[in-house]
Image 1 (cartoon, rainbow, N blue to C red):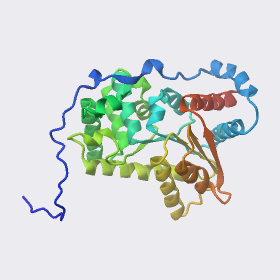
Image 2: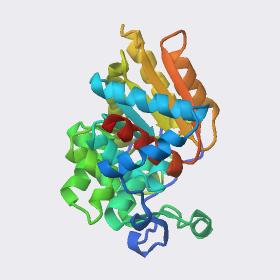
Image 3: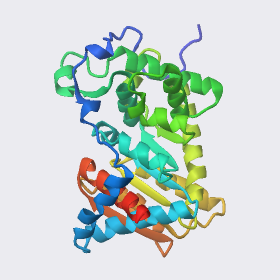
Image 4: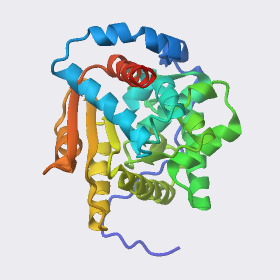
Length: 325
């Protein structure tokens, strides 16, 4: 055994004796029976009366502009990237995003680490979102066995096979064929070969607490996904759209870094649209998504405030209705 190199007297915590419990034994606050349902074409046409009745003022103008930018991007075969935080998944919106993806209005999805966790649990048992206040006192928060074991196993396999974190988890779910796969964004995206990138921050996600979490694997697969996202951000040039939905820090920072890499390598990244949807407008999304990337005439950015479970179905209806009519 090698002598320790670290000068610190404190040593890293040993996670090998962590206690877990079966996922299906946990009470979850969100179930698929309450999830959103995509509109059919006929329902979208019927929704046009409601959409047309809205005032053409302020946020409605922005909503219509974003919807039109997405339709135009699809017609021009440009990237339409949706960056979604975990709250978007656990408020039942995966079916809406899946439908938009299948219609060609989402060419790729970027998630933070919590998005993957909620999506996996939904696919496996049809529910997610534990009661943190109840579980934390007993040290049980985040200790669902399958969530930690299976996701880390998938990430470790992805590192071995040199694929990204999002693709690795999508592949695992596709091979597993879980009961609620149709509600899983990762499963359906993998099935349709639509890239999902995952941007993990080590220590923020519950799966990092489990014994089989491997920092090298997480880092390798997440870094590959950053490079993959950057290649897709390049395709925003000339008419693409990037939407940040419910990520206050991680995805806005990731997006800004991808933008600077693309421009550093000689792509002007002009004439594209960005939008931030959230129920509170935060500094980083507005600065790193709505303002900086499209500054100096490079494009147009929009901030739209409202609850995801209301605004995203409304945006989806506006997109589908506008294309059909």
